[in-house]
Image (cartoon, rainbow over all chains, first blue to last red; front, side, top):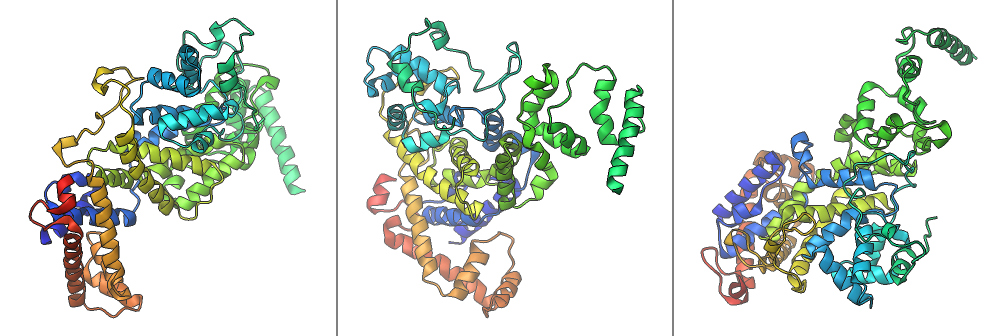
Amino acid sequence: MSQVFDLFQDFKREFVNAGYADPQDYLVKVEGAARAQLSGLIDAYLDRAPARESDEAAYGASAAAEIANALDEAVGRPAGMLPIVLPRLRKRANLRRSDLATRLATELGLAGKENRVADAYHELETGQIDAARVKQPVLEALARILGESAESLRGYGRRLGPPAPPPRSPGVVFARRAYGAKASPRSKAARPPGEWDEVDELFRGGTNREG
Amino acid sequence: MGGTRSASALSTVVDRVVVGGDPSGRGLPRGIARIRSPTTRGDRRPEPPDGLEAEDGNLNATDQRAVKGSCLGSYGQQRWDLGGAPSERPKFGKAMASFTPWTDLQIKRASDEALLAHIRAANAHGRPDLGTRACGRLLDRYEGIIKAKARNKIPWANAKDVAQEVHAQVTRAVYGDKQIDVFKAYVIGIANNIVANYHRDRKDVPDLEPLPSEHQSDDEGWGHERGEVESGYESVESRLEADSAREVLESVLASRNDAHRFVIEMFVLGAAETSARGVVAAAKAAGHAVTRQNIYKIKERFLADYEAALVAAGFGDATGTPPGPRGEVA
């Protein structure tokens, strides 16, 4: 018991001093009920622990900084947070983009159009599609594949703030991580004009209630 | 009246110095010199858009660095580096006149709820980009807690992945209209849910794709193999064990009276450096009469009872691998 409490105190000290401590470093030192006890104490402490102090060096490498940087590019854009969230959800589901597209085509009953669905998904994931125009069946299919609710995906697709201004010169090139992703070789631009198919209808045919 | 005369006089000075061709803008208040001097130097950079112009002029150097560090890192770049007639300029900065982004120091000192209000104010003024820096700092305050929670419950968890999921969900709420009374409680609630789902999602994804080690590109890469145990430690069932252990703790804590709970909260679950003397003083201030000796006894008894409750719940004893159902899966 004393060993558990000593480890617990050590964990708290490291956590406060460094802004983070890995519980596994402490849990591996005890077994059975002692380990369960230490784990329970750590979890209870974390609910009560103070927020960490701002640390410039640590912030640069943090997940929070990554999200904030991505937000800089997402605000005002019609894809909302989907370009930030979709790649992470796909990673969580251990799916390559091509695998996801194949499953998405199947879920949408578009067998044989996997390439078109892959193009459209690529554009959705890279912020080239207005998320408000994506129809519900697409979101529901994605939700099933990615383990996230369709409502949640719709929420992530909501634009943050007013529309961003369009580039003022057609010659301007922006270095964007998400929105500057390479266009798919079979992208919409490469297709003959007027070739609006059911994939376009599903990914771009919805009503944009945001105007 | 006096203000009008002052403004008029100032305008005269501006016209004399700037229009008269003083390239340095000397003789002008700093803000005005900063605004007008690029044009008067013959610099071809365009003036900032309406709304931004006056506000930029009013920002001190620290504020301007703050602005560059956040929103105008992107939009400000467009504003200064691109050409175009006034009519073509973006109107994104129109609302800026009534919103000033905080400096790093202000953000650092602000409470969670004040930061949240600041971010939402930026959004309400049509400048969500001005809130992203504050949002990043706000999320960062709880990143250590989120990561530790993930690692405590799931030994094989990628703590940064979990943190990103929590951050994304919290960000959506921050920029949405979700009512958040106590930010910390909200974040911890989200973190607990996501840690639970993380375990389920990683475990239940159908095995349709090749092993991660076969994918190397940025588009395809990911972390551990599904179910991979980091450092050879325990099985995925440990998360369930951790949750149960926490439930047992809460039940033991709930069985204590108010004074004992107060002591346990401070002396056991509080900061490591909390002194017995400090607990006595705090308890007294809260209306609980405890002595230093009492405090140590309360602590020891709580830990002993907690351990006994865990053993009774099937976690085994403190010295070896436990028998029973949990022992079989661990």
